[in-house]
Image 1 (cartoon, helix red, strand yellow):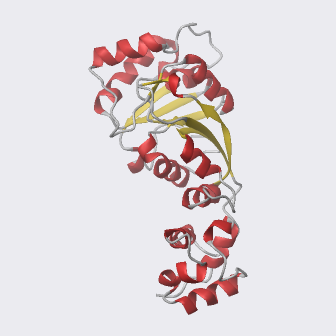
Image 2 (image 1 turned 120 degrees about the horizontal axis):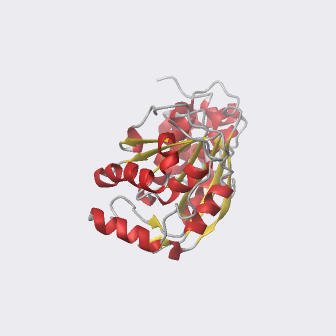
Image 3 (image 1 turned 90 degrees about the vertical axis):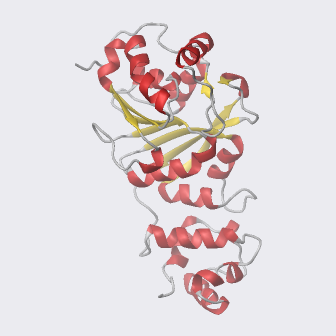
Length: 293
């Protein structure tokens, strides 16, 4: 039996620093750098994330990398349903029990997928409407792009990532940090920075600051006859040698510098421009002239 997010919930359902450490000790869990594990230990930060994500009572939220459940519990207090995707064997086995113990009335609204998020192409239950996650730093961008590609019903996304990655995702054309993540994220959504997160809200405290990134899905990708794969191939080629002009950087993609120039001119883009100055729409226009192989 499931319950409504508006049903009364225990005041202390969210995990605090001592709760996190007790859980970790009981499970024999030591956060690993290999999996980018830094657990949120501050309930106010959890509430801030959920508020910034604009999680609503009718939302079906997917969370990647729930860890010990800090954010999971907060999401369950607010959303209609939460599906968490966890790769770690120990953490995946323990999370349902944590939900049952701390939010028993909402346990029926929770589902766990024990898998690598990069391999997940379907989820149990209703289609997700939102993605909210403290993404493992080492795979943040691939996981984000994978989820946006495979789950088109995700309308709103809020992810916490390394501050530098947040800057890249939200960068505009012409910025020094504008690159592959910026363009590919913008293919799917309107992207913006949504705040900064300090180091002391995590255990263990990371060596870098974190940032929140908000993504609101576009009504559709940019209007183009090119496929997503074709557009992304141009993006990858343009930034593989980002200091070069597009005529030179795209020569391998096009087969020659002359062919690259012809494609650029046909797309209305200067062959002397560099990738960092182009919008996703301009990359799509170039991709429409993908050379026949």
